[in-house]
Length: 362
Ligand code: ADP
Ligand code: MG
Image (cartoon, rainbow, N blue to C red; front, side, top):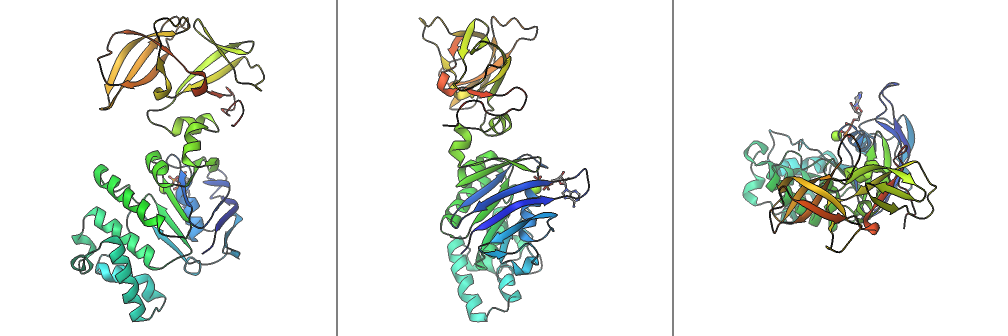
């Protein structure tokens, strides 16, 4: 087994289309890296560059100490799973899974042994092994595609939005299966998705991609607690983080009547972006005099919790500002004035111009 390394990878189609600008990262044995980002940010192109389905315009790709940048896809020993499953419709499940081994002239008894292992692993019944892809459900087809990837025992696994064609319930189940499956594999995995829940639940680390560049590369928990910039902060976490652009006075940001201290080590800007997650806003104790006040104008019941949209009072802007607050669903909050606080340790600060995180990255 071997680590996968991308060095200053770039793919340019024409001067206007640069889906991958400059990507450097490495994935060790046993690591599960997810490329997470909105549609069009360059995820699939990056994966196709690793697989050799696209030629890099610049940069290098290493698997272990092998430079594979110029190798044909078949010579890289990589397995790839696609959103569309890409199974052969005229072949049985057995032959679909066997196809990469037959292509490499693996001896028949070895093929049989490996397929038996994989089908046990994936719980593919003997009956199912004899069916054609058209007779299977979406979830079964994706398990077969996974089986075909696993049977090759590749140096690297690549998966491009493998759950996107499944309905919500099935997606959760297959997601859990994928997690269990790859915990037992030692080869590096690169998984592509636009779904932050998939990224957070599956990965040992996540690279957030935007416009062909890595915005942040960190374990999921750190992405959530220490987003490197406003883009990552807004993309990771649901419901989305609240952002308020506030004027500054000295070392404080001003929100209505309340002054909030800026973190240490930040030069005093004229304006700053305050970020706070809906789940981090707290109701204020009655005696708290520095509480913020707002009127609830929308309540969305999420089952376990209520998502309140609150219009801030005492905000002298022409356009009143709103904040979303996640609270336990014990009562009906509609139309009420509520008093709340933004706990200092939960506030994220960002530069108004660049969107970069302000303050120490502790
Ligand atoms: P993602 O998988 O993150 O949705 P892609 O990697 O598929 O994004 O695409 C990134 C960008 O590159 C998009 O703007 C897309 O239109 C463009 N692109 C992808 N493939 C080609 C191609 N063969 N020719 C020209 N532009 C392409
Ligand atoms: Mg894609």
